[in-house]
Length: 246
Image 1: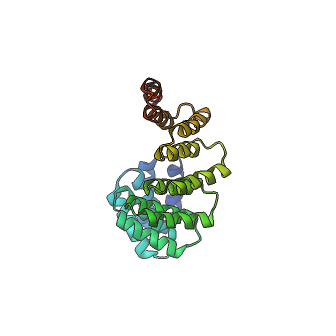
Image 2 (image 1 turned 90 degrees about the vertical axis):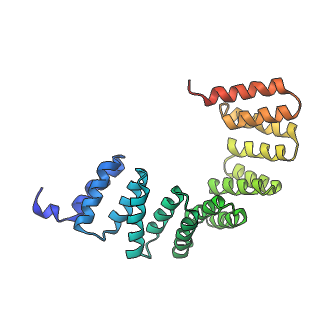
Image 3 (image 1 turned 45 degrees about the horizontal axis):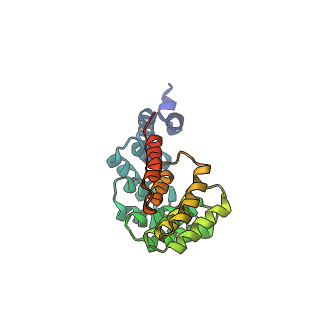
């Protein structure tokens, strides 16, 4: 290695990128650190080192680098997104929300940011606020199945079952064979006490995904509620078998 290469941050960061892509996070970390020795305010190194440290579950150091990135580059959305993700990992939801507030302020047309902000509200159990974020995400990207699922989940927890059912219908317009959405429609019927109708949805979902543990458990529960414990046990046993490693 020449003296010129040693002083070139691009040399170190390109080595880091290569190792990062291969999932060799410990080695990538060292090369991002080398980049910062040469160029202490290198934006890509600060952000990517924070991400790598997060992968290594060294959250304190990840926060240190990402906080510095947002201080030096306060208008860079990616720095705020990654800082918010680390705060989420350490269950500091109030700081995670602050980061996503800043990110959506900087880039209000990014649907992913609104979805992630909704997930922060979900962790805070502010489900109406979460739904508002999912709505903004879906206004920008109506085919986002993840946002529809999370919106349905919020409505289920608010016991607004018809609204949840509408969300599952929207998913099925996008993906008619989405077993999770069909299972969700079954759960709506369970919540309403319509167990036979629920079972019809669970049966349809199991045709698509026969080893799905949650669907098997849900059908077992519906059968038990209908007073058929022996048949219910078959589905509980099948769920246990599917869950446990062979």
